[in-house]
Image (cartoon, rainbow, N blue to C red):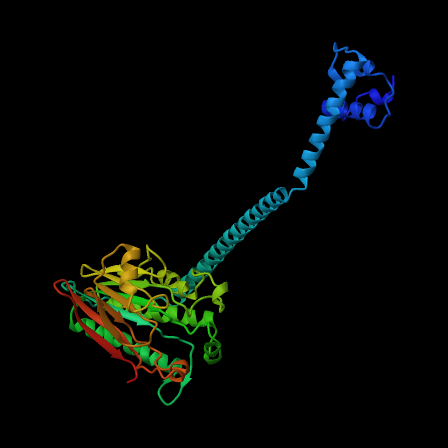
Length: 402
C-alpha cells in the first residue's frame, strides 16, 4: 500500500482526507484508482465505484478551496488584528493595575511597619526619661469648678531662627514665649476657676524640612526639634495637671512635620507630629488627671466637646477659612458650634451659619517668608473660657512679644 495513504499520528481526520483528495486530484502523487480510495475518504463500508468517488472528490476539492480562502481572509483581516491588539492592550493595562496596586500596598505596609518601629522607639525613650527625670505631682486645684478652658497651640516652628527689624526668634526666645503661655494660661484659668483644660495642638510645632529657606534657617535637625517640643509640652501639661482637675490633650497633623520634603513622595501619616503624643502618653502616664486623646475620625481632623458644645479642629493647610465649616460638617456628619484653625499665622475670627471660626496666631511671628511677602503678624496664642450656659465666655490673646 502506498505510504502516502497511511494516516499520520499528528493528523486529524479532516487534514487526512484533504491530503488524499489533493494528492489524487491536484498533486497527482496518489496513483491508486478512485474506487480504491473510497473507504479511506468516506469511511469503512462506503465502497463506491470509481465514477461516484471521482465526482464526490471533485466536490470536496471545491469545498476545501472555499474553506482555505475563508480562513486566509479571516487571518489577514484588519478587524481580527485590531481585536487582538485591543485584547492585548487590555491585558497589559490589567497587569499594570495589578502591579500598581501591589506596589501601593507594599508602600503602605512598609510605612506602617516603619511607623510602628518609630513609635516603639519613642516610647522607650520616654520611659527612660521618666525614670531619670520623673515628674512630681502635687495637685493644688479645687473640685468645685464648672467652667472649661481651651488653649490653642500652633505654629511654634521651633528650630527656626529669625532676626529682622520686625522679629527676633531663636531657642532662647522660644523658651521665653512658651513659658509665658504656660504662666498666663494658669493665671487666666485660676481667675475663672476652670475645672477642665483642653489643650488643642494644632501643630507646626517644628520648622521641619519642607522648604529650602526653612532648612537654611533651621538650627537643629528635625528629630531633635520634635523630641525637644514633646518634652516641653509634657512639662507644661504636668504644671497644668497640678492646677486644674482634668487635662485633655488633642493633636492634628500639619504640613511642616512631614517626613519627606517632597510632597509627592510623602505619605500623610508619615509625620514627625505623630511622635509628640506617642512620647507624651508614656512620659505622663503616672499623672492620673491627664488624658492624651486619640482622634477617632482622622489624623487631620479632631472633634471634641467643651461644656457640651461641639468643637472641630484642623491645622489649616488643607482648608480655607471660607469653607472649613461646611467641609468638616459634611465630612464628619457633626453640627459644629466652634471651629479652631491655625496655619495662617494671623489672628482671624469669623462666623458661618452660627459656627464661630477661631484662627490661632503663630508663636514664631514674622519670619523671612512672611516679611518677603509683606505679611506680618504679632506672635500670640489664644486661650478661651467656656461655661455651660453660653459657651465661649471670653478669649485671651496671649501676646508673646512682651
